[in-house]
Length: 420
Ligand code: IMP
Image 1: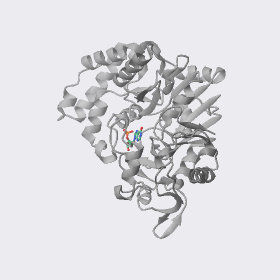
Image 2: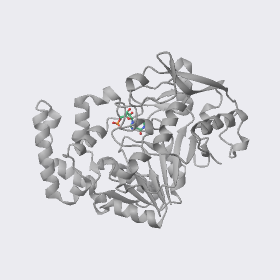
Image 3: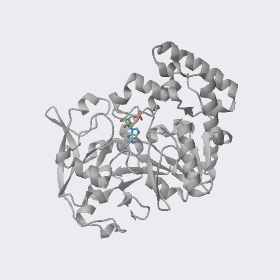
Image 4: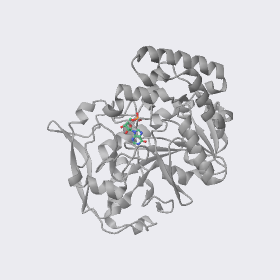
């Protein structure tokens, strides 16, 4: 039995909490895309964690965590997270790292700064795009290379030669050397060397014999191909990209959970039709929802729920259930708006123009307004105990996507959850 937990917006939907809740019953949790750009927040035994690369399964002793080949892995960040989680648990998490996952090396961050994509796209500045680019350009270093130090040094030497020729004026690039880079990389990776393996084979076996969760990072609208290009991340963030990221064609994923925040947020640049200015309520959502990036601390842009974008995300993720998060943040709003269509150059459109970013930037939302509710709902544990206005709001979302709601989150703690 396999389950996928997938973001339906621009990331930060609350996938960490959902995966953490499910991981208890899982034999394996697989992260299949992205790297330390993600920040999955969860509360484990009362302690708040923001993990970046290690899947939420790490908190359970019987669950094996896999960093699949679709990821780009920063070994220094992984080491830090691994040590923090080990310290919290009093034991080391079970971990497998795909031998074909590419590594983020210090020059990927340097290149991102030199090229200015941090400012242009509003990236997380973690070297994600430049590491995926090295993969596509076939000059990347993979986790499997760590098992062969001479091979690692030869590849690093080739890569550093190219870099030094391309950036002769950069003192940061000039200071890189094969010896010190390979030495510090191998030292940081030391606890994981025995975990580097053919992860596809391990996932295939687990799919036959046990319960597997695929944990997506970011969200459908940040997908490299079908998101709001070029304001996207550099990996496939959807179910559509899962098979390639784990090396298994058409993986049987019976349960596909589309995680939807009850409103919308976005970090970084790019079009966002339902964005609210601070004076229109954007500030209220940001403050009530604690909408500041886990990875970068940046304030998130906030706005109403965009059902046009959500239908597009549903086409990419084919969800069998929607998990709605942060419904409690909407308590106290005088009215709540949802966008079902856009106005573009005077005409009404209902399809998300993902391939035409310039047009999306011109789209104005057409809103429907619903009454809000005043009650605090953090203590509610049953759907029928929610205020009528909150239930009506959930009904609008589920009707629009045509998929039932599986769970509603009304607070960050695991128990602050309504299971339908
Ligand atoms: P990158 O993934 O760091 O290259 O950033 C590309 C875009 O994706 C930027 O707009 C980032 O803010 C956004 N992004 C990347 N990871 C996340 C995430 O986990 N949550 C929300 N936005 C993200």
